[in-house]
Image (tube, rainbow, N blue to C red; front, side, top):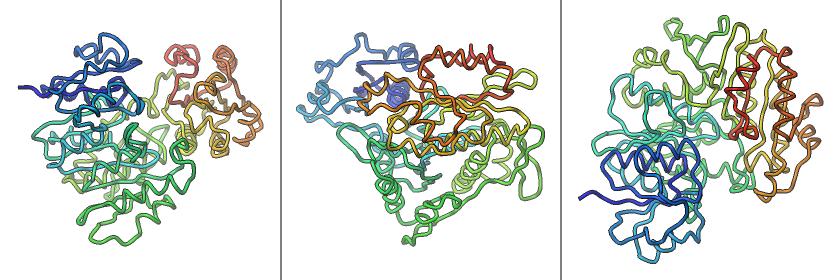
Length: 454
């Protein structure tokens, strides 16, 4: 008899992918949510998993359920969660559930404030290229992968993108602490999620706990150029092998990046920027530990196109080029802007960034963005003034933003129509366009906008 699993908040990015993965393994999957957006909606619908009615229904919770998986979007008083607790059913956050299903596997966890999605994606791409058998959880849609999660009975290895955010409404532990990795990589630490970790020290503590929890015989891989990681990585831990890495040697020729191997060969790659050279090196170090040789890595890496929304080229026409990126934290905005400018030093770069996350809209945190857009020739910041009431935050003004970024010529806009009008006026003044956000710039269609600008 097939096992039944119910998802509370099935519409979440990780949640719906896990639901799809279990459905493909033959589980009976049900779920609920009070809002489901694209692409989750269409993907659930295609597999017959989209809830017939939006909302919470305690009657969906029954004694035959093998597990109830609760997402971060649900509240502690969610009626389905309360019912499951009253019935004494097994309740898991999705990281807890993934661990339960992978206890017999070698577990590789990729963590860090930035780069973890790209590093995980590179590892998965190379393993797939060489027909290795593995399970995975990754935070972006990848070329050649139907879902962002896979769980199977027979794969000996699972590669997990592990983030530091809370696991569920009833479990404030960082997700990555639930995975108990045999191999862990920490790519870098830059303060984020200020709603959960109101101080830098508290944020760093989460990564310290991950490092401290490594088992004997475990492997901790870290970016040695990150000051805080250098401290974490150099601590003596009993029987833990600590391996530092740095940016992969590379060269840029006419807007194209080539990795330089130890033998002096040049390998073309489709991703670029100093941060991505670190990501490639981190992935190479992980792969070396799970049986992939350098030669196998270089054979596979040229066909890696990058993860969705990570320095993704939307359009190119002659000398003009248009990118979008998921960057939202200060370190990501700075690294991404610098990457485009270094890759195309002769192009006039317009960088547009949306303040969208809880952290980025927090007046106390805003100063962390100082200098992050300095590599751009023209810089614009957009935020939706209505968001402060929704997120229950103190409002910030355009002047607050200019002061925080310490860029007097910064253009700050709060209306999507004004943003589109401003961008149209810049069409002939820039050759490279970079749009960075975890949001939508007030609903602007970037594909259409790229057609207009390029």
